[in-house]
Length: 63
Image (cartoon, rainbow, N blue to C red; front, side):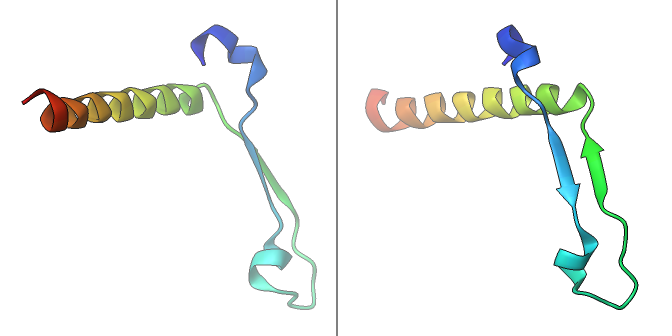
């Protein structure tokens, strides 16, 4: 991900009516664009998954 930072866009569009159902007065749609923390968090998550996978492979096949 760090090599292609501009290729990723992290955002969410929430429509309260879809989540809560129609309640008479329409609620505004909320759009969230994530900051640089999203790619950092995903990078940390990827690193943890790789580390855990290596440990599991070593436990099963190396010992």
